[in-house]
Amino acid sequence: MRHPLQARRPPGRWALAALLAATWWLAAAPAPAQDAAAAPAQPAPPPAEQAAAPADGPPAAQLALPLGTPPAADAGGSPPAAGGPAAEAGPRGAAERAPSRRDRPGATSSRAAPAKKRRGGINPCMTPDPGWGVYDRWSRAPSMGQMIMPHRGGVTKRGGFDLLIHFHGHEALRKEFVKAADGVVLVGIDLGIGSGAYSSAFASPYAFKQLLDSVERAVAKKTGKKRAYVRKLGLSAWSAGYGAVERILRQPAGKRVDALILLDALHAGYADERQRTLKVAQIEPFIAFARRAAAGEAFMFMSHSSIVPPGYASTGETASFIVRQLRGKPRRASRRDVLGLDLVQRYDRGGFHLRGYSGDDKPDHCAHLGLMADVMRVHIKPRWKTPKGRR
Image (tube, rainbow, N blue to C red; front, side, top):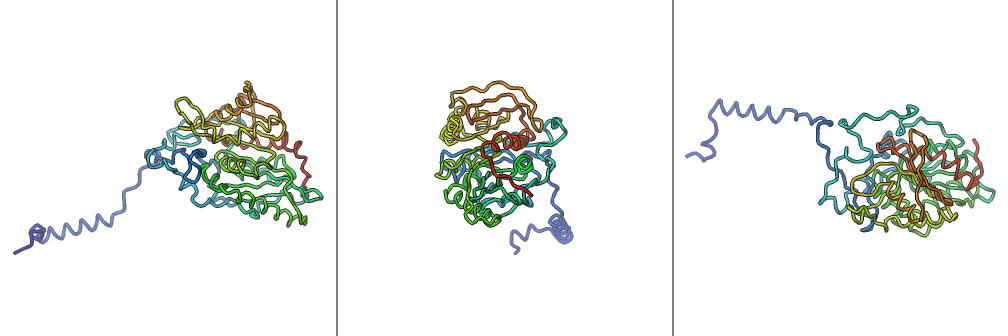
């Protein structure tokens, strides 16, 4: 007697036909993937607090890195931090779904409106390279990131030198930095897209101290000044890089910072999204520094675009909040600025300076990096009086 399963097997030629059909199906190539333009965008990590940050830490800036190549693939880029962008979903990642990529500021889509024409015909995300000025090429001497310094000079007789550490978009910023700087040492650090990678990398005060020590050793080796030391210290950030700055300003070494430059770079979460009230604890270090700058004890420059991100405060909101803490009010302005930026508001008090711009797309975000040349020329050089470097 046959087994019940055997009784259902097809006889002879039908068994052969079924076998051939199954073989063809298994060997056939998979169907082509849906066209990227037509496929629904995959959900991205939400702008939530980072898993490695405190419970009330800053949200991750969900702005795509609009540079030529990702940092990890950039010939001069820094490797991503351990547990970097891929680990940025945060505690809310499984419970909440973020807007699709094309709904986020700085994202592009085939369904989006055509890019607007920029003044001068330059793409702010891919600007021409002006060369290196008096500076050497990137060196990997620092404990994190990389640095450039003048071929010669830039150091006092006692070994003092001035240092600017920039977070996020280091190569794009370098192009603007060398247009005006001629002695300040620049360290550039790229760790990923979200602010969580930057915040995590500097969670321990030892990381920043080690960075400063490594730069001093590198300058000592190049100049022959055995006791080379940082004389003036500045921090700069674009986009998500503010995560590192927030951590550093909370640490003892943060008291050494003389200049702070935020290029469309400060976000915060909402305590109440309907009322659009900010989680003030997240930006307290920036408020404290702004007060120091307004009193003439330090220098601080902030710029903001008109990008409105989903679910967390824009750079315009955080800038306006900080100005209110200084008991000030931005005044309207109208000026054509670099890389197609249009100035719409400003505020100045002591060493604190705010510049607000229209524009809500990816190139508008990139264009804020172009402000660095003027910040160096108009503010930092007269303030620091850095010894000049030379080729």
